[in-house]
Image (cartoon, rainbow, N blue to C red):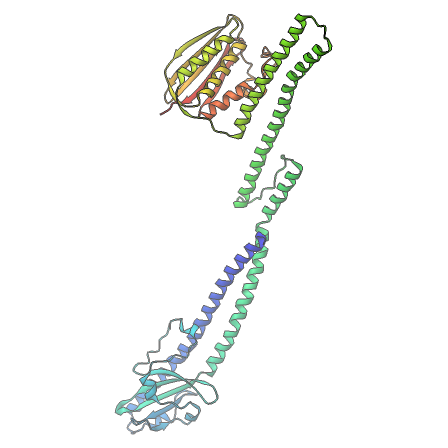
Length: 471
């Protein structure tokens, strides 16, 4: 079942139920009002006749009974023994009934069950009399009212209900038709309104399907002018498409760059092996040089693959191991390993304050080695590379300073991009892959920190890593 049809059915059912309840309540109130008016008139007229009969000097009060004050009203007077002593001329039309049986039993309203659920808004106050109902010989219902008189007598009044019953019967037939037509109308209207309401959703579905088939992440869905829920959904969908487009482009660039970087060492290895194979009588020195070059390229390839695996782990969102560690001790271990990479540069340890953080010691050590390795590579012989650790508030700040060639201002915003290497200023590292700083930033962010770089051409570079202190 489609969403449009489900919405239409829910809307139609709820609106139909409300319509049915309203029409039934209208019928009950309308019908109750008619019966209440008739009862009020019957009680008022009968009580007036009873007062006149009581005040009459005639023993039976025939003068007031034989001339009823309202058309269609039947009056009868009974003695204590139940004998009829006076009656109106039309008394034969009313059903046979004795007032004593009516006075002995409870009042029986002439209402159907639905009308009986509605309270009376104009009560007739029949006391001390009792209202009742009876059916005449021709099937017509009559409203009865028995009222006791002095000297043990009783007055019985009756009025036909044929007009009120006919009106309520017609109204009772009209009510279901109105409710039915109303329910069908609300169902059709709900279907049309639901189709209009979910039209943006259908548009987004078609656009998403077209994007999935064409892989055109630059395409966007049209946003409605109204900023309602569907408008916000379209805006969110477009933002998601923009993010996917950016990620897709980054992935394409990454694959292209990775392919280019992997092809270079593989080509060098293949060329050296082919050279050795074709020249079986190659001098030992030339053979060793070819093997050494292939070995260097294989090492470079291994480092590149290892860096790619680290970045793949980062893209997959895999968590790092975490425990409390002494940051200053990890920095000293990384510094000791970095000293073996120096080629005439001076490595120094500046201010080194003890600090405890929560994180992965191996990754923190990798981060520091990346920064020290970069500083050594781009610092000429005789230059200085300094490692420091300071505590600033709730953070520990790692500083790596060098007196190297520096980075141009136009290159600074891109140094953390994968495979990015500024040319020609920072082309001194033929074995680099351009992934080191990208890995360093990922490690810092995984530990809740941040990394920044300040540099000036010819003056050197300062890299700052801020990490939150462990509790």
